[in-house]
Amino acid sequence: MPETDEKFMRMVIRLAQRGIDRPSREPLAGAVVVADGFVVGRGYAREDGADAVVAALDKAGGLAAGATLYTNIEPFCDNTDEACVTRLIDSRVARIVVGFTHENDQFPQAKAGILSQLKTEQIEVATGVCEQACRMVNEKYFKYSATGLPFVTVKFAQSLDGRIATVTGDSQWISSSGARRFAHQLRREHDAIMVGIGTVLADDPQLSVRLVPGRDPLRIVVDSSLRIPLTTRVLANGAASHTLVVTSEAAELTREREIESLGAEVLRLPAGPDYSWVNLERVLEALGRRGIASVLVEGGKGIITSLLAARAVDRVVVVIAPKIIGEGTEAIGNLDITRLNEAITFSSVQTRKLGPDIVFDGRLK
Image (tube, rainbow, N blue to C red):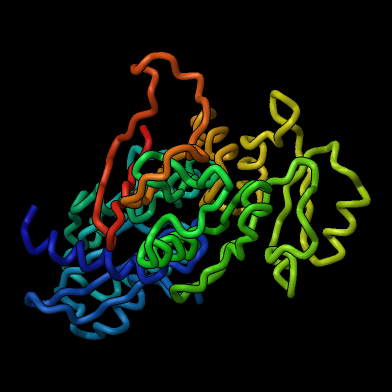
């Protein structure tokens, strides 16, 4: 891979990430046009529907002729992207470099032929540049496109000895202010944020994006018996209109009507195998049908444990604070693992320091 190709593809990836406020079911795309070693046009897929490649070509103007265009993801061959391909051909670019192509991948939206069309127009095509990084930037989109299920990130903060709260339930704050800002960045990057009723009763969280600019995710509270107080912050002062309460089929109808009167939606789903919890796999299926392509799970212990036991988690982010609590609430409960070779493992892991804390960020196998 030419060094310059990697350099400009990294620039494209950074551009693509500017569209992070878009729904996860839509791919993050960036593009740059390079002529004689200089960037003459750049663009990214924005929330208003602007196309990355077209935006980059528009900015390049006549300088696109004979230039190289870099983009992180091959466009789909639908009505919109046919216009994009025509625009590419008309621009007379000499070369296109694509990070990730849909060849050998099972995405029902993708149709073959876009790169072939460009080749027939004597445009040189190179693929696979920074392919893994290009795949990672769209991991939520790819999971949803291939399965119809949301990409699930589990995030929690814990002490050095693995506690998310003291014996009295006190959990605010285990991590530092920098780690809390990072948590809000994660919220911004997901379509929905999900917690259990225990977290709502203990912490009364707002479940919104406040410490960084960005959109609020859909709030989801899993509450099998509708114990949620009507005065809680996810329901009060207009917040209810952006809140979904998931409950079991056995929950009281009167209580459901009270919650819905505030503007929230109540979704009834079958209970899990032990009949005491909503079946979380059914929750994810229901969210996928609604177009929710990514979910950030912030607790509590029961939901995190159930999702890990069902192998329904794609990413785990743990903020580890340099504190020792002793007895308290564990982050994860019993997973019925009796042998080390049954342990949940990771395909990739990154760690970094964030103030006094350590952030563990892993993708599950």
